[in-house]
Image 1 (cartoon, rainbow, N blue to C red):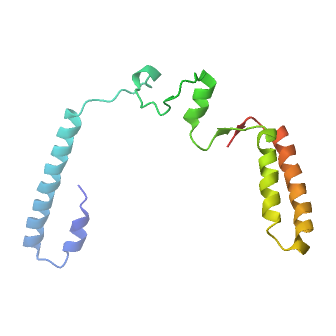
Image 2 (cartoon, rainbow, N blue to C red; image 1 turned 180 degrees about the vertical axis):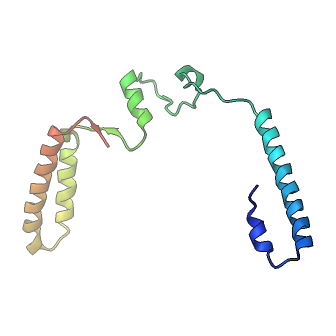
Image 3 (spheres, rainbow, N blue to C red; image 1 turned 135 degrees about the vertical axis):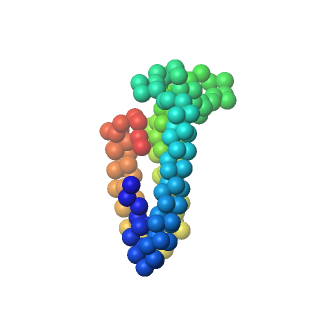
Length: 138
């Protein structure tokens, strides 16, 4: 058995080296026996893949409302908070336009028209992109 401690024992007299080497070997043998005993005592894990029914996980989605969720909606909620169902642009476009206009009115009068043109282009881009994107967004 190769012991890394043996390389560091060169300056010690041969008598002490043999004694230390024997103590280290006894110590490693005792540790190996303990490990073997623990491995034999521990129950074996199955090597075959578990079935879905065997795994009981905490259900993260709990419907606390009276609204019934179908299977697809529940599956989407299980994905987590990074996923959402995109709302059509028509539901929030008027609110977005009103908030943008109120923010532009707080600017200097000379800069308002420039920012209105930029905001109009961006709002059109948002509305057009939401009409063409997927329902499931991340």
